[in-house]
Length: 196
Image (cartoon, rainbow, N blue to C red; front, side, top):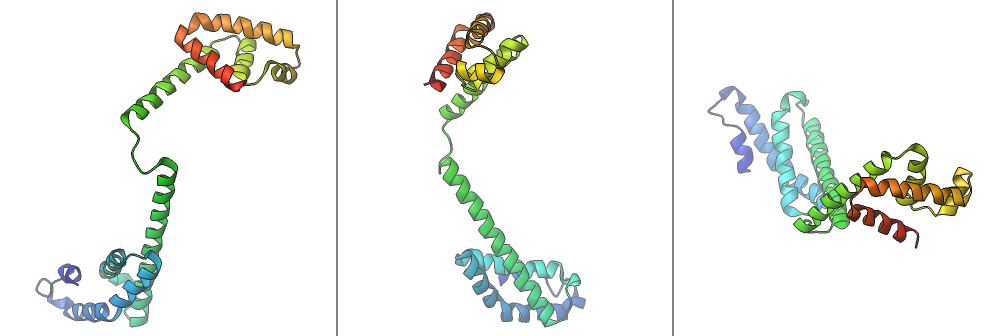
């Protein structure tokens, strides 16, 4: 109630005297009901109390736009509490889903650094493959990035398996010139793992 009383003062604007009394009586009549209503949704007493108080604050700020009869005000307060309570539930659900996906603790610095490094490595490999001539590039993408076997590539491109092997070998020679030995090793290891 102290929050509500701080919102206004009869000394600052004596014209609003009747509205102040009206707000006090509305608060006394509906606050406990609104808290109980919110509690049924959010299942947290402190949150329900905050939502109840916030509803009166919102009403006070927007009172010019609400019909000045008890039914309209009551509907406005209940609607405000319902919406705020549902927003809390939605927010909590999003937070819970995020925590389930990512875990409850923040990633460690080493994990973040590993993610940065792997992103950079993959970008270098993609860049080297994109610089290959078109026929070698297509086979390299299918083999190294998509993990397809030589026979699958031959079937999809309508060529013999020997042609695929030759073009793949030539592409590997070109990639050796563009990539450091470490990155080339990573590319070959990834290809081996995908083909197991």
